[in-house]
Length: 135
Image (cartoon, rainbow, N blue to C red; front, side, top):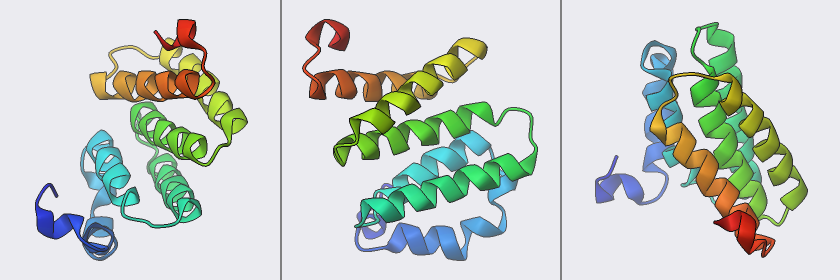
């Protein structure tokens, strides 16, 4: 997916809809979340991005797998970032607070999940010019 051919147009969206959906719940769910976030960046409308990512979360919840908290949290942090980009700081803060409580209740967390939480948190504090919290 790092190839230039996939970055142009809606190639990743088509790849996901026409190929990945056939076996999406059979692969590593955190890898699926990473791929879903990459696909979401190709949508031109932010509302479509949020709807797509929320649909992926619903599919993850429907799998009834045991370790779905990590991929769901990773996707929710991406939604929080889109909300922040839209200027919806309140919703971003709600997602961050829920994400923090989820992180605190989990063990053996993948570093990419931590990184996504702290990246969104830093961007939130930066946008609010709360520089003490930013660092």
